[in-house]
Image 1: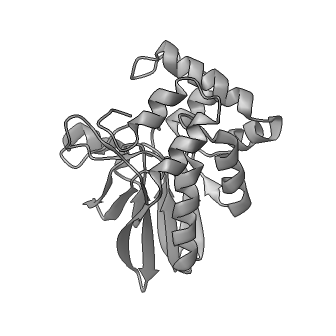
Image 2: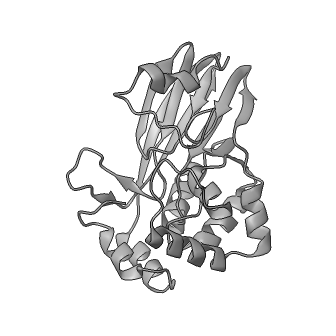
Length: 243
C-alpha cells in the first residue's frame, strides 16, 4: 500500500500541481491532505478545486480555521496584513468552496494493511501544536497514547520522521511554502514537498519527495491575482525572506 501525504499548500496551486504530477508517476493508491490548504497564496480557489478533484480526506489546519473564523486566542499575533489577505482569499471563494473547508476534519483515522494511522495538522490534540526535531518532554505529550502505528502531521513546513512510543511519526513538509529553517534570513524555495509512505507486512518505509517548479510561474500567478501585497509576495520567491 502506497500512501501520499501532502500538506500546507497555502494557496500555491503551481506547487500543488507539481506535487500531484509526481504523485501520479509513483502509482500511489491513496492520498491524505494534512491541512493549511488555502490561506496565504495567490491561487486559493484553484488549489481547493484541485484538492476537491482528488476526493481525498483532508485535515483542518490552523490556517484553514483562520479563514472560517479569526481566533481570539491565537498562539501567534494576528496582523492587519494577514487579515487583509484573509479577506481577499474569502472574496475568491464560492459558497461551495467554503463548505469544502468546513468539511475538513480535526483528525483523520485510517487503517492500511492492518496498521492504524492517526493523521492531523499540528497534533491529535490541536492544529496549533508544534513538534520539531529538537523538542521533547511536554512537546511530545499530545502525541502519546494514540494506539497507532503511524502518526502524521504537517504545520511546521519541515520534512522529518522519528519514533514516538511504538509509532512512526512523519511530517511531509510543505507543498506550497518550502524554506530552510536553518538559513538566516530564511529563503523560500520553489520545491513542492510531500511524503510517500509504503506499508507492507506491518513495516513502514518513508520517502521524502521534493519536486522543483518554476518560480516564474508562482510570481506570474501572484501578480495577476489581485492578492494584497502581491509584488512583495512574488519577490520573496528565490530571495531571502521570511514566509
